[in-house]
Length: 395
Image (cartoon, rainbow, N blue to C red; front, side, top):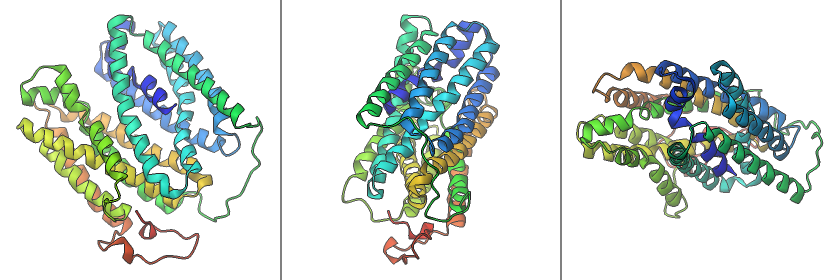
């Protein structure tokens, strides 16, 4: 279900400039940038409300309704010929699609904490390869037919998910009724301190990571002298393959016995080096930097989320993840507005240098916020029950 969702929802993402030019006659990069920022903002604002609703209504039933509405709005996007109405309809569609992010905390709630690392890693890989698959499928659709047909395929994906959810509801014998309000057995503040700290680090990480994306293919063609868009696409996809490698290695029993904090620190260091290498005029260094960045980003993002769910409680997974997701998207939006001003004609290395500096800054911010100890996790002292801190979390 996640793979279908990611593939369908990312089909149009690389082709928004083409879509607006062909469908509405708008050839303006600022318009495209504003729309992508609006998309990101809509999803990050809508998701917390679905997470709150999920405390009273089962997620499977939420998805049945929201994905059905999203499918109808997707069909409306296909027929839309007015740019104002397209903005209204498409952003409304994304409000309902945002509910599907609940699948992540939902699955984690079904598993014990020892399985969280594998689940988080699996979702990371699905997101990477789903995005690549969506871009390939979107390009294939554009070659065969009108670009707006993508919205019909997106609607079809939503309908398939509705069918799967109805099947799950029947198999699990779920009742269409509100859950009773249940107070958490663990007393905590409305927004615990770990949300602020993990959120701040996530914002900086996603800000730095996104700076290295938008102009990479053009930068690769400039540095390598190879004009092939296919080769550029392969270089762009290196982080996805490194994420798959990271998932495989995470299942190895020979993995380092480090805390999540120590893994994150190491990842931030390697990510900074990888971004700096990509600013090199030497194409071999760019490839090495891309490999380092891809693996480091997998480690950082997975370990940050493992850390989040180790400090949260199952009944708060959805709400806490929604808050962190909000901060991640703030970083992406900030980077999307900044990256255009950093790029000069035939000089695409500046975003990588700024991103490397941002990753280095995040390294020291992480130390300051979390007070990470350099000694082994085995030296950490257990704390009283229901009073978790970041130092007590084991990898």
